[in-house]
Image (cartoon, rainbow, N blue to C red; front, top):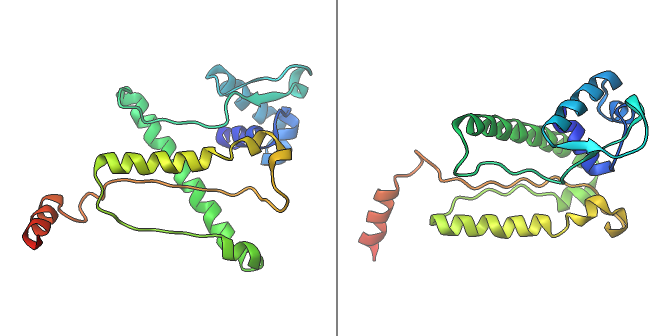
Length: 182
């Protein structure tokens, strides 16, 4: 619920609990309670004006990141749970999009799902993440400023991850094989 509220505030700007309730199919009272909890932790803030359920709220940022090297064990557990929840959310969106794209040929040909495995160093994987991050953030201004959205654009969901594949291939054996072939 809280992620859905933040998402709506990022996508549509400041809104009241009543407006958000309509968007997320919840009661205004429940949305108001969750907004106050989000505000306690700095994710949202009052946008000014209004009173009670009719006061508008706004997101404090357009994105989140987690997974710092120096985080506490508790924060790491919470971050892992959040990562799992976000992946499940995106998988559900992917399933819905694939089902609906059959009736939308222009977007069906533009949509994609790519997967590959590459032999990379830790530095190369970090470099790939940086390139992807720059691509994603390069159009982030379109969230807050609808005038920057090109005609025909739609809100699109992009998800990328890069992890070493533990248990699929033994890296020491691959290095030995590569050396034997050289």
